[in-house]
Length: 246
Ligand code: NDP
Image (cartoon, rainbow, N blue to C red; front, side, top):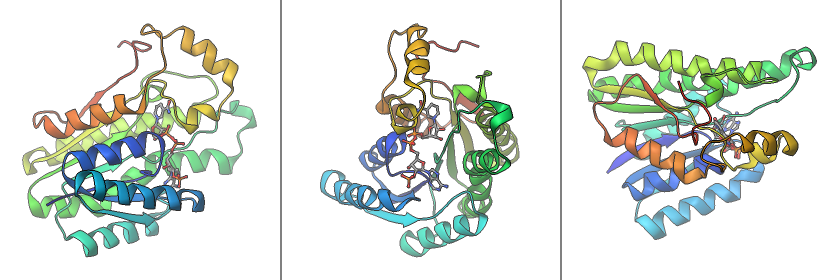
């Protein structure tokens, strides 16, 4: 049986990815952070078993913290063994705040949660992938990692950082059969988007060439593609409705 670990797998894009991993036949270690997501995650564990006959394992950890990432990976290995086939670094937060109003704590939280968490997770997981001579790491970046967005300096920096890390690790571990890729979603309907100024969301939505905000399944499908296509490494795919064209 194959094993996947996903950070921030409890809701939104992470929930859709968790279900897709189950559909693809993976046992899934589903990480979440907040108390309010405990029940959601446990429900996902039940759904994985009932719908796809795979095992889910809910693990609470704040992945912005190095020690928590270590404990998360330890728990995964104790449960499913040392072979970790897929790691999805998906946990993320946003501030959406004018730069001069950002507190040190709040921009550090964004950088630590969005970027350093992926660094920590790779630090703990990649050695197992090296041992297995195989692995696939996918990090959820953003179009904010590709283009500037006002009031999102911390978010954009964190998401660009993920792309930099991904490219460097793809170079370093290519011959060991470990692939690293990013997904850079455009605007997707989740709590994250519901949490920001809705006038700004509506205005931005007008400018999407596809004429609509994306769905979480669009991103889960991109993840499936990146897992299945064994020649993809060091890349990003950006399901974004055409809002950003390089
Ligand atoms: P949601 O706010 O719906 O979900 C965020 C997820 O991240 C939750 O599962 C949450 O866990 C988890 N999380 C946050 N902080 C931590 C932490 N410190 N430790 C562990 N888990 C944490 O967001 P989305 O589904 O929209 O976002 C998922 C990813 O997609 C993020 O990286 C985001 O930046 C990216 N993205 C989203 C876009 C969008 O338009 N929605 C666009 C581009 C990128 P809990 O439930 O416990 O709080």
